[in-house]
Length: 287
Image 1 (cartoon, rainbow, N blue to C red):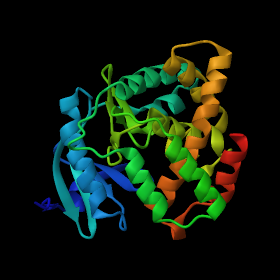
Image 2: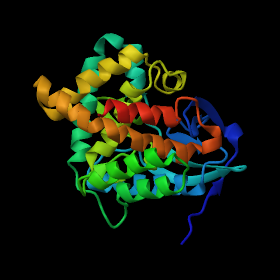
Image 3: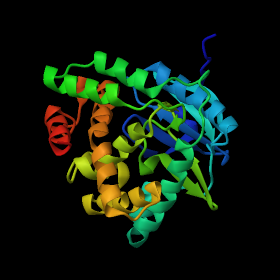
Image 4: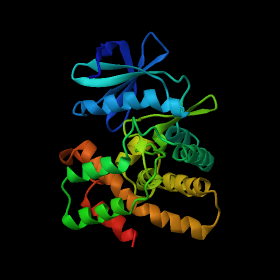
């Protein structure tokens, strides 16, 4: 049965933020409500997937804001969520308090490890590998780069635990001592390296990207500091050799984020940092 989208008026909402695919609003008169409104051109399935995911994820013991209803404003679709009062994303926490980036990165690592240790409901969510294979088949890349990405997918270890799908510090919020995962349209199950490749791309692959700075509010040095504190905490080791070996294992998975981004944003609207040269760099650094 198709989802029903309730019409709303944008004049009832105040804009407070935005990202690559959507804007966020608070209700002007009801402080308990928040609106995520997807940009024009974002497929209807994105809002439907995120709404269904939010409804199901909490039953697995993962903390997320409650999704209340699907809505439509003109040609744009969105979701009304419970508002987490006083919340800050981990990217904003780090930007506002850079001296404590390592501490925030360690919290983020522990929450990520919990997520990756949680069995996913396979009746509701799809394997992320299957989705990425579909994305790859629907975009245009040079044959040699496509072959390398196919090899990454083929070598992926199977797993039935949760992955966020777009793991970065802007997609977890913090309020009153509690952490919440947000932006759940890509939530799935599969190999944790899929998620770690996304975080690695944002922190280590693209140097001094204006697009990433606009999204995460962090400088290149701060992003690298975050990663360098995150990975030992995630792996639960201080062994430099183990950390370096694992980082080398993660590196080619950053290419899967590029595939996702190209498919999601559209090949004709890509920022300059998402191109075949960045894939060349990822695979060169992985050798």
